[in-house]
Length: 551
Image (cartoon, rainbow, N blue to C red):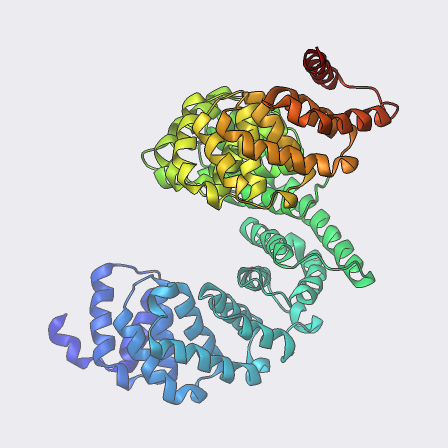
């Protein structure tokens, strides 16, 4: 009550906050009153009182920037007086509240100062204190230098210490190192593998998901090293770990929540490891969960991506997913229109070869108002997926061309070539796109174009039959570059060049001499292999053109 507040000293306030948080009492008015009292009595708090207060407010999620900043300022002069438990609780509280409470100058100084105090006193910490502190700094994205010190200058990473870690502590520690993309942690992850294998039966589903996510993330972070015996040993241990975890996941597949299941298949696909029965078992589990519509759009997108990445067919799963993806556009709008998820889903269905016209139509409809927000890569992947799935969407292609027209200079040559080829594959004419693309490409160094890019470009323009007079300069220069390096083209590439030239060239007398080189080169390669049906058609077309020209 208000008339009793004067009797609360700092110790009572911090103890009450700790007790209420421990019993999970989150009633707002109580915490508003405690916040007011804590600010009034802040200078009376000792190190334990400061740590407990920060921990308690964070545990119930009660944001109080003023209180956190005040306690940061009070902590700085007495930082050396904190014990390991106080420090762990203090940092955990800031980590739990995230960047909302950690941007003030005093808090930044406090978090930097804690690193200096904590490292020399590493042995004082329990495994829980170590794990919680590392987790908190990762949540705060703070900083890789701190993690370097943990790995390089302390006893952390010693097998004896790791053996004392409980499952949740292992999970949190690996998650933290992966979250900050710590490139010096492979040895830590390698040592952790053995500990996890020994304790694998003790891990909860969420902890298992966090662990495989961490191994996948840290593998993404590190550039592929030169093959060494040590790297081979690490990979062998990783595969043993993944096989062991897979056995547990298969046994308990019904216990995993949708997000955990999605993380696991994503991680195994990222690590390019597919233990027998794992993907089949999780497909059945996912289908059951989809009946309850518990998956998020992100979870579904990552799941189908994982199956496509591993080329693991599951028609029942993909059919079921297609009826659930991108449906709730009102309550889940931010996820529905996220280009990354759209790209993942389209790529997955196109790659695995699972036809789903309704899904592709639904995605096209949802995407139309947001095409201006697509990056050049996202735009490329979208039209490329429709082309590979052989699914025509005229409205999507027309509006995508319009939305990206002013961005064509931002496309690299590979992606712009892929966009034009996608339109050609579906025989979708877009004169403005092809015309503007030719002007953009003409300004680039055509000598730097790869053979594949040259062939794809001339094939695309020829397929669309886009040979307006203003394009001649670009196409003629492209043919000139190709013919200068004609000796390097293989048989199939030469056939494409010849066929495209017969359709696109508007000044045959000027270029016929160059085409003779292609004829000669093709004759040299006739004995290499038989022509495919498509190549035979192209050659027939070119032969007819040559005969007409000679006549």
